[in-house]
Length: 468
Figure 1 (cartoon, rainbow, N blue to C red):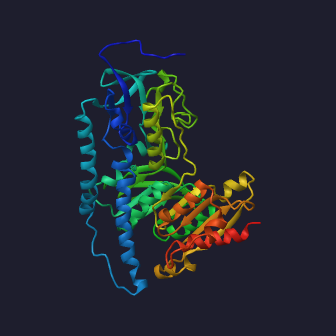
Figure 2: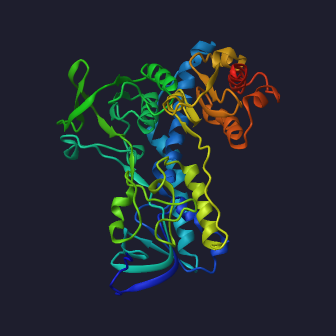
Figure 3: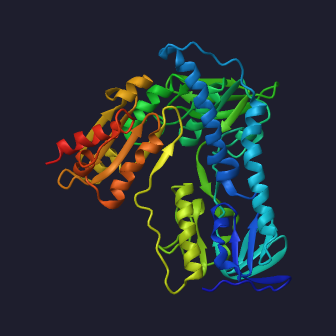
């Protein structure tokens, strides 16, 4: 079947159309100077990461971490306190940095002689035909880079209540004295960390028995135990309904193991995951295949089932990570310019981090996955409390766990909970990528002493000793 638009009213043809200005905006390099290009954006230039995702959230996380360091300084013999939180100034610091980047990016693209920027919602009306603002655009090549959006669960009364998602919560003008969060994943926990650290009374309601249940079980269980000291945590709980009270706040009723309960707070954050935006593109008018979970299906060259149509980022990759989207962007950019010598995407291994307190970083398989697939493995573990810099930080909860093949010593997965986990994981990512074994890493090089990297060294030594 070849689905193409049957109309030709107000149509313009391009060499390339890019839908979405997150990582998709980076496709255009100087090699495209002779191409006629259209960029379509229905929202703010720069995509999720820049405007409402990883960049603003980590700027807020850093502020929250500073507050926690001040509060924790008493254990180090330093008497200090936080006098006040200036939310307006915090917001200004974040968005006075971010917003000019978005505005500058759009202005730059608009002034390129070979690029036309369309502000509006794009939808397909054929395999290589799009409609935006009642105008039809066709192209030899199209890139779908529309990202993902918050998933809104079907909860009674939610559609009538005042609630926020991760798209809006980081731009609220007034800091809430109290907040209820529905969800137990990385978005829910990162934002719970931010707002609780800055002084909001945070209550989190989650269906699972532990937070971050997609993580290695030992990591998830330890994190849940530590994190419940910061917030009011309600696990194994199902939200029944949401209502708005007379003061403009929200009431959340939920069924927990102890029965029906309710929470009243100033503000509600729904953080129950993100879903690809494929339902907004009218892809049923095309031959572009969609997977069971709604993601665009692509091959190793990032091409969809329609030749000349590509997809990248959160709309095609369930990992929904900026660094994977950037890698996919480079592949597509190359393959557009060099169609006769295409390159393939290689995301293995894919690391990621969760910027909570404590911080988490992971790469590769966890113990539960290896057990489920009947993969033989050994474990090496190092605790922050075993190393000198861990003593200096008074860090007693953190640890690094390395999973390895008992015969070869190759690393199968690694998981870190504790300060600077997102940095410490990278040595283990490199080892997995280039086939370095736990034997080579544990004894084949020197580790700076005293430094946090020694927690990785200890885990590797134990893993090496456990190999056959």
